[in-house]
Image 1 (tube, rainbow, N blue to C red):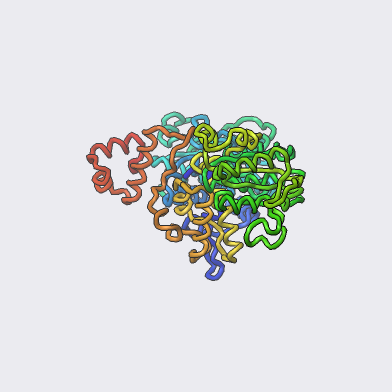
Image 2: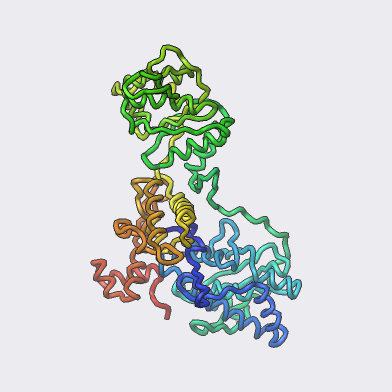
Length: 530
C-alpha cells in the first residue's frame, strides 16, 4: 500500500451514539481551527510568547509522535511520505510539490493552519510562529527515524514568506554544528530534550501557487488514476463523435462494456438506444434471428414477424460482446451487415437498411484467430477500424483502490447499507490482491463485503477468506519495481513490529542470527534511541 492510497474515510470512525471519534484506531476530537487560533491568542496574551511557544511545541510533539502510530496498522506506510500524507489528511499542512520531510535542505509546507490562524487572530508576525507544526514534525520524525530529530522553522507565511520552511536535522548534529550560535528552547513530550531555535530568517517573498493534487478522474461513471487507463478514456472520448466501428479488446471482466457505453454516451447517438448482446452465449441459429430478426413462418415457432437487434438499435449503438465466438457461417452474414449497413430477416428475401453504430468486444486475440483460419480476415479489419485495448487490473494497480471505493459506494447505496469505506488493513489486502477476474471480481467482492459488514467500514474479516490469505504487499508492475534492499528493510521492520520489538523472536522467524539482525537494524537506524 502506498501513501497516496490512504483515504480519510477509511481511517476515520464516527460513533455518535457513544460520543467517540477514532482516527487510525486512536480516539480523536474534531476541533475547528478557529478554536485553536483562539487558544493561541489566549496563551500569548496570558503567559507570553516564550511560554506559549513551549506549550504549543509540546502539543505538536505529542501529536506528531502519535501520528506515526497510525502506521502500525500498515507498516508499508511507515515512511516520510506516509507521515506527510497522514498530516495532510489531518489538515495540518500540505507539502510543496516534490518536497520530502527528510530532505537535507529542509522542507517547505503550504496551507499551514497555524500561519493562517496567526494572521487571522494576531496579524503579521515578526518571527516564524508555526510552533505546533515545529513540534509535530519533530515528534513524528523522531519516532519515524528512531533518533531525536528537530524541525526548526526559518521561514513562515505569517511573517510574509511565500511558504513555511523548516530545517530538519538530528538533535546531536544540531548541537555539534550550531552550539554557541543558537539559543535553546525547552521541549518535553515523550522525552525531554533541547530544541535549537534559529535567530535570523530570510526576507519575505511572494506566495507560491498551489499545485493540483493527483486525484482519480471520473468520466461518465468510469473512475481511473492510472496513466494507461486515462489514455484509454481520453482516446475513447476523442473517437466517440466519429461514427466508426470500434473493436474493444481486453481480458474478461476488465470493463469493456463500460468503455463501449462511454463511447456511446459521448457520441451523437447518445439519445438513441444502446443494445448489447453476448454472441458467445447464443447458438448460431438463434443468434441470426436475434440480430437480424425473422419473418413469420421462417421456422417452427415463428408465429409473427419479429425485428432483430440491428433494427432495435436504429439511431443508436449495437454492442456485440464476445464477437470472437461467432461461427464461420455467421461471420459471413455479420460482415455484410457491417459493410453494407443493411440486414435481411430470416425467411425474407429483401434487405432492410439500418442506421446503427457497431461496437464489438472480445477477450480473444483475433489476429491469432485470423492466422489460424478460425476468424475471417475481412471481418476482422472491418471491425478493427478503431481498436481500444482495456488494460487488466494487474496493469493499472493505481486504479484498484479508487475502483474499490466507487464499487463499494454503489453497492452500499443499492443495498441501503451504511458502509462508507475500507479499513487500512482491508485496503492493503485489496490493493495487494492479483484480481485475475479484474473489475468484475472486484465488484463482486465489494458487494459481498457490503452485505456482510457489521460496521461502517469494511474490515479484513468482511473480505472473502481466499482474499485474506493474500500477502499485503503490492505486486510489482512496470515502473514500480523496488530495490531489493528496500523490500528487505521494510519486511524486517514489519516483522519486528509484529513481534513488539522482540529481536530474538524476530531473528528466529526470519531464520537469521541475532547478530545479523542487530547489524541490519543498526544499518537501518532502527535501534531504540539511547
